[in-house]
Image (tube, rainbow, N blue to C red; front, side, top):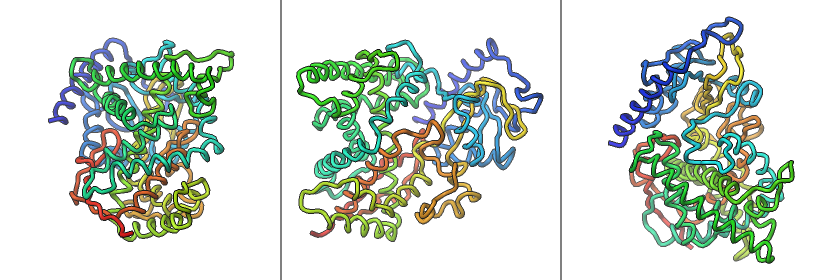
Length: 481
């Protein structure tokens, strides 16, 4: 029923796009010195190929849309029509390299204007401009010496998380628990919220907000998009109250200038010497809290899935983690050096990210006419790169469906083939942060339990991240003390 409802909404929105295109959009025949457009088709006059693109994800095989067209049209680039826009899909390592290397030269980040309704900027700038500002600020918060400090905090939160949500349970549903873990960490490290009750107060609005982001943008009462807008307004109001209190605490010496990214934002000026206002900071914290937990929770869930299915892989992770656990004194927290020893565990996590990338791909927009691989790409076209065009491609990963952590030993995969965090100037700035939270999760998980899937053939839905349809219920078997 949900898929049917989404399909009707998609059809309705596409009709609107169709008539807007008739009024305002005139397709250019070419944009690269007379070269032809990429091969492909634009689908139905009204809905393009959006439904096919989305439905392959709903069925759990988003790569099918990409590979079917790579075989039929071109293994390098093909044209289509997605989300009401003419689009080209860039494929393979060469396509990834081209898009990642030409950021802000030939292409720029793009997402639908509906995102600005969920993330309204108090400064009247677009979400894209706000994201650029945020990327300039994040390196200070995510530099190595800062990350070293976070390991102990992550370990402390993980201990509390597993004690509350996993210990003394015979069965659990993994995905909601993984979301709780990563959201709790984000709340603690970004705004110093550690009280589980206060975290829970934010959790449900954030779930509604995240659902609104990936919904059809129909702002009518009761729709996911409408609920997302309301949730965004609620969270921003709560964040402004936290920001006001933090300003008081900083002035009175009750808070540290370096305790989290909120303090950093309050005390850091831009290149013109201007400080962000409260609503501007709330905007950015809101985006960080979404980005800081959503994708990692998907990764943690699929680690549980694959370790349940592959006992020999579980044993390798267990042995590595227990060697580290046994080296610690009672009550001693994990530290940076401990995580550097988790080489096999991280190889396993990387193979999970290859097979079930939380970020399936992303859109760019052509900011100039250019030619690629002999084909013309007109200015204004939307450009999509797909992680699966390399991750599940035998040209880059032999036997791509086989789970093989050894792919990541030594120098690892070839450049631009393993792209769960994107690449180039827009490489996810939180990549190392995600590595830490995933490894800490794995440490506490295997140290406590073995487990089995309750639904052996549970369906995977990709919308837009991969998620087990029932949340991955598992039966826990605690290790004997």
